Image 1 (cartoon, chains in turn red, yellow, purple):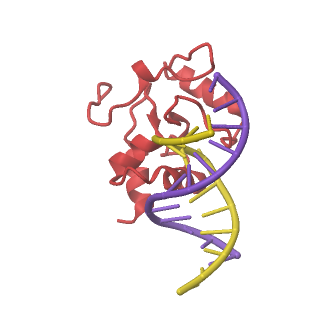
Image 2 (tube, chains in turn orange, red, purple; image 1 turned 135 degrees about the vertical axis):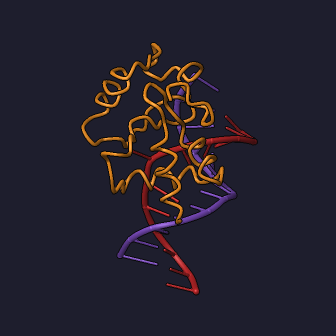
Image 3 (cartoon, chains in turn brown, purple, green; image 1 turned 30 degrees about the vertical axis):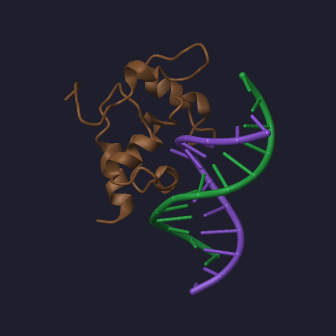
Length: 107
DNA sequence: TTAATGACCTATC
DNA sequence: CGATAGGCCATTA
């Protein structure tokens, strides 16, 4: 299993209504320093259907700037659609919607 | 093989 | 608090 596969596996496991940071995905994928690789992996995104890249944000809860598969506001719409709340800054509420990785409360 | 790039993160000024 | 620099890893040319 190559690096990308593992990353995709983790991203795919993100439950609806939750978000994960690049660093967290990288950590769960096996190496905490794959944050950039995660971004690259999602950039090439071979299966955008099965891979919810819109649920992946930066560690600060901010949405990626280069995220433009349909507009920066589209990502907000998608997340809001899944029940994710946003702060006044336009960032995701990490304290409540950050996926821990182990607990799939949504199942 | 070397050099360059990137949807990041952390530390420092 | 905003800007800058360095480090990290895998992929591509």
